[in-house]
Amino acid sequence: MRALLSVYDKTGIAAFARSLHELGCDLVSSGGTAKAIAEAGLPVTDVAELTGVPAILGHRVVTLHPKVHGGILADRTRADHAADMEAYGIEAIDLVVVNLYPFSSDPSVELIDIGGPAMVRAAAKNHAFVGVVTDPDDYERVLADLRADGALSDATRRYLARKAFATTASYDAAIVAWLDAGAPAHEAQPVGGVDEPAELPEVLTVTLERRQVLRYGENPHQVGARYATAGDHGWWESARQLGGKEMSYLNVYDTEAAWQLAHALGDGPAAVVIKHANPCGVAVADDITTAYVRAHECDPVSAFGGIVAVNRPVTVAMAEALAPVFTEVVVAPGFDEGALGVLQAKKNLRILQAAPPHVPPFSLRTLDGGFLVQDADAVAVDRAAWRVVTPKAPTDEQWADLELAWRVVARVTSNAIVLVKDGQAVGIGCGQQNRRDAGRLACEKADGRAAGGVYASDAFFPFPDGLDGAVDAGAAVVVQPGGSIRDDEVIARADEVGLAMVLTGERHFRH
Image 1 (spheres, rainbow, N blue to C red):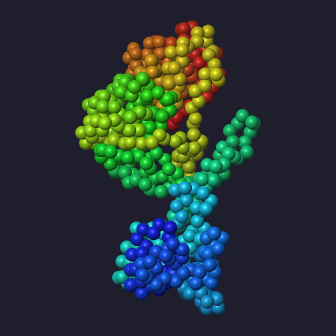
Image 2: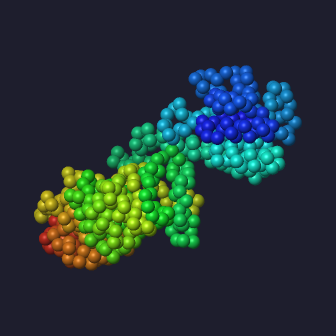
Image 3: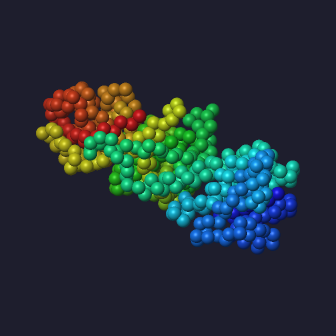
């Protein structure tokens, strides 16, 4: 039996090579792997001795040779393959042990592995005869088979081949993602006029790697896990859980929504409370404790069992304010001295410390046989591009609330209405089949606190009666995209009841 070993990650390689040698296996290797094996006092044949060609082109070409790939790819049942091997002096290779350059750790052209994936794919293709090991965690499984039977079982070779192809697929996807990230935005040609968005890519390479097994899925009878896109390093990868139970599917889903929104509300201290992926409390303030308290005040009933995200370190005062409230997860960039102890006393509270999030470039939803894909919904806050369409205009204080309301309503499930007053969401109506009901719910939750505030709608009002919620709430300003065939009637109604109205020109449906 012959084994070819060429690994970047040398964890356990010397011990593994020793075990193979003790089982009567001849060892072939190159570069640093050969050095590690030789330093362990084991006999090893250098690939250059096998091929008759040294490593060339700055080590770009080492194993790309017929004596390597012929030995891996030969079908041991075919006479013509045996004849070719004899004619060209090729010896069979029975085990290939390769892991790849860590491209994702520091993406660059020189970390694009060529020889490694070629050997891995060759061995995986010929798994009827050859074992391929790409993960040090599989060394013991391989040795167990060899010690028991002197050969790898069909099941083990198939398992290793599947893992090998998954490895190379993930590796290539990471390279594609890197190349895409370095390309001009929307490199494809526009589908229409100059103001129309460009097409999405013809091919999206999405390879997912399981990173976290979750307590359960959306419901306890479902299995759930968190996967990461190959080559990507989102905030979840560096997040630290400092207390509480394991995360469930909905914990992760809602925490993502909370963390994204907390970092989309401007530069000041901001707090968000999320329930079922929708905000039920949002506030900005001069300090994070006040922001949290005011966010919780928006809808304390819905906040029960919610997710809290803040964009500043948690203070002791904030921790003490949060502690009496049943909360599933709190996520923050850090925790002041003493604050962590207050929160860790709540044994079931999941406590996450995390880096700021990035906005994913695409959103994907499963379909039968595929995905529905769109680019990210970027929420622009641009007073210069917005239009005041009523004689009455917002005051400076109302403009600040208007901008906050627009940022929040864009992250609420449609149909959505958000009421904001003095930097605090006071009423949120979400997920309704008509806008009047969304307004009614927001008004009921505000319970009189929205007087003089802002009434934000994620889409246009199809009829003037869509403003009834703003009137009932006592709001002073309405912000909406506009675009209805009845805009003139809606604007006239706003003027009639003394509302200022701002049109943003951009809808933010969220389903």
